[in-house]
Length: 567
Image (cartoon, rainbow, N blue to C red; front, side):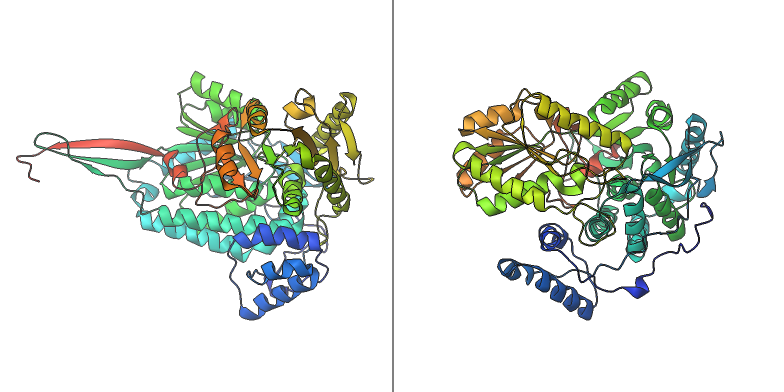
C-alpha cells in the first residue's frame, strides 16, 4: 500500500449503502438541473425514480416542469472521515518515498487540520519518473506496440473503476479540497468519467491521410505521439483536471509524468492506484505530489520531456514557457487565468440572468479560472439586478462541505483565504460599494462570506486582477459598443457570456468578444466534446474535444517512391 494507517473508525465508503439525502435545498437542486443533468448518469430505474421524487419535493413549482425532463443517480450519504490509502509517489507502477525522505502536510480546509503527510517529490524524483516514462515509450515497448483500440479499452476500464469508486473519490475530494460533497459526486465525478470515455473512443480513430502529390510517389501522414508529456494540474478541480490531461495524452499513445497540486494530492494518487489496477503498463503514467518551484520546475526544464501541459496562474505560465525556451523547446499547452466578462442586456430574463450570474461567479467557491468575475449590467436594469443579486448572495448556504444543504465550502487554503480578504479590503478602499458579505464566515477553516460589490469601476484592482474567490463585482454600462470595448480591455481572454432575448445582439456580442469560450444565456456549460482554452494571457492551445488531441500529436509525412502511380 502507498498509504498510512488510517485513524480509528475510518473506512472506505461503500456503494452498497446508497440512500437519498432528503434535505436537498432548492438552490442545490437548481445547480443540479443546470449543470449535473448535462451529464448522463445511468442507474437502476428504481434509483432514478427515487431521485426524481426527491427533486420534486425540493424544487419550486416553477422548476418542476424542467425537472421532469431529466434523471440522475442518487447521492450516497458520505463518510466524512474517508480512509487515505495512498500518500507516496507513483513511479513505474510502484509506490515510493521521495528520494529526500521529505513529506508535506495536506490540510482539510474546512478545519485547518492536517489530514496526513504526503511524500514530496523534487528534481531527483522527477528524473526517475521521466526515466520510467521514457523507457515505457521506447520503440518496441509494450505500450508502443499496443493496439490503439486496446489503449481505448484501458481508458474505458479506468473510467469504469472511477465510476465504481465515485462515492469514495468524492469524499476524498471534499476532505482535501473543501468543495461540497454533493457537487464533487454529482458534477466532478460524472464529468471525469465522460472525459475519459470520450477520449477512449478517439484512440483508434485519430488517423492520418493519404496525399496525392505529383509524380510516382505514394504519400501519407502518420499521427504519432509526442512522447513523454509533463502535466501540471491545479487544486480547484483536481480530479477533473487530471482527466482533461490524461485522456488525450493516453489516447494518442504518449507517456505521462504528472505533478499534482500540493494542496490537493489525495484523489490523484488514488486514481494512480486505479491506473495500475486496470492494466496500464509500467511507466506509462507517473504521478508526483510536490511543489511548483521544485518538482514543477524540474518537469518544465527537463531535456527528456517532450511536451508540458499546465493549468494554473498566468504568472507561472510565463515561467513554464521560459523553461521550455531555455531547455529543449518542448511543446507547451497552457490554460491560465481569467477575468471573464458576463454581460447582461436590458432585455434579458431577469430571474434567469440573476441566478446564472450568481452561479457563474460563486460556483466552486469562486475558484474557477473562467468565473464570470466582471458582471456588466445595462443601466436601465442595473439597480434591480444588483438588488436581486444581493438577495441571492445572502441566501447562499455556506458551511460544512459534507452537509447536503451546503452550496459553498471553504477556500482551498490559508494563502487563498488571505489573498481574497485582501482583495475585499482593496475594493472597499478604492471606492467600490460593498453590498453584502466581505468578512469571514466561520470561526475555523477558510470560509468567506459571499460578497457583492456594486459601483465597480474598470480601473479598480478588483476589476483588473483575478480574485479567485466568492467576490462578485457588478459594473454598469449603456451601449453594446461601450461594453464590448470595456469587456475586451483586459489581459485575459478565457471566457465570456451574454444574456439577452435578441439573438442578433447575442451573435454580435459573441463575435466581438476576445475570448476562447462564449456562453449565450447560460454559463459554465462544458462537454468533453467541446474545446476549451483562452485568448491572450489566458493560455496557449486548447483542451477537450478533437482539438485537444492535436496538442499530443506529431504529424509525420512519409513519401514512398513507386514504379508507377495510377489514379
